[in-house]
Length: 220
View 1 (cartoon, rainbow, N blue to C red):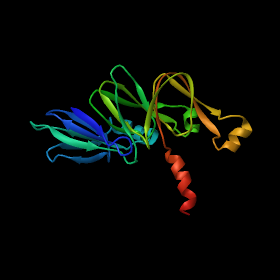
View 2 (tube, one colour):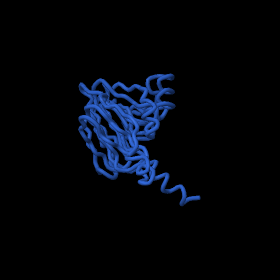
View 3 (spheres, helix red, strand yellow):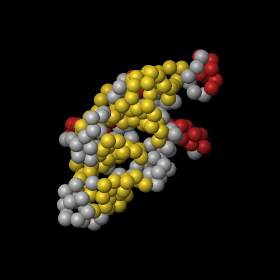
View 4 (cartoon, rainbow, N blue to C red):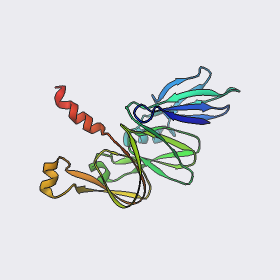
């Protein structure tokens, strides 16, 4: 399989070339276009109960689409996400990464997906009670609203709520005031997400909840 992420960072899309026998699994609705002879099969992600768990606790669709090249020539597929923003492909070889609800787009064979408890601190930070965790091998593709920034952290780091997209397994999160009590209330920042540990994080430059909050008073 060959892949290229084009139109970064605002309108990113994944252009995939599947060689004979290759396959890729994608979130329902992620397909933009594909060659006519490419096979597409819709199935529950990992079975009925794992799919329900993923749907209601992982923030993803109940179904996934499996695209497979059953011909003897290369075929093309384009995948994307529903929001305007960047996309990243993460090589899982020897690594584990956790995705926030809604970030997942697709994965290649070898990637193992599970839903894990993220903690009440994650929920309070607007990141959800559960997270998607990917292990094994292969590549997992995830997206963001706005641009994506990859950062290595050692120790502690502050992130505004709902800007965290993905993080490695060694990262822990907690909730803290952005400053003093009065300063936190008057600055508009309030509570922030305090990350600690050692590993990598991916941040999105925009917040969907921030956009909703901006539009809500204008559409009443």
